Image 1 (spheres, rainbow, N blue to C red):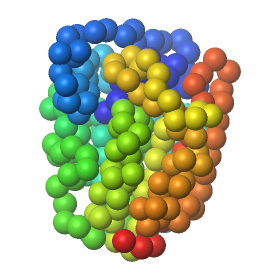
Image 2 (cartoon, helix red, strand yellow):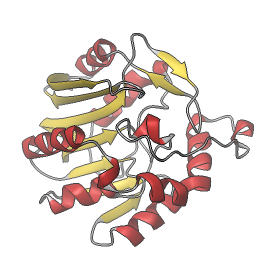
Image 3 (cartoon, helix red, strand yellow):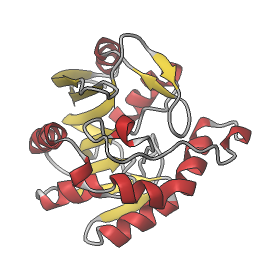
Length: 230
């Protein structure tokens, strides 16, 4: 669901840009409420610029497909936004539901990709039974989570996965955990090693890691991790 300038969210694209806007979110204390409010105001704009697979990097599509092939059973696209990754996974033959806390995003998803299934929910409360999923895709949907809360978030997400199921993360990679000025609200860089440590603490083993630094773009990171313990 997360909004960024095109150079931030889709590092390989430079021609189009979503300009930052205040939209009054500074008056909202809760981080999740800030994010919901900001993206609700810009859902259509986001969907027009980034809500299609042409706006994604081919390496990311290949990474997500490899992850999906290893997932047995139903999966959740957590923070699905306008639904393009949900549709991508469905067309590839997966049993997937997209969730997002922003009704405006879900309306865009239903309009643009009506054959996929979407539901309103907000991480970490996915609205499914514990121990029921074969996979969770969290593609740039955890970038606003405060670092002190990330370990708990990953443990909560793990509770919905079956043993052997996989979580896939896309994120902004950096040399240290630090905030930066995102187009909507504060987001965070994460070193791969820091996220790997938190994933392992949450009961995961690392399956695959990718890093990419396209010229003029914020570095991209991706991790897939298999649940081995509670």
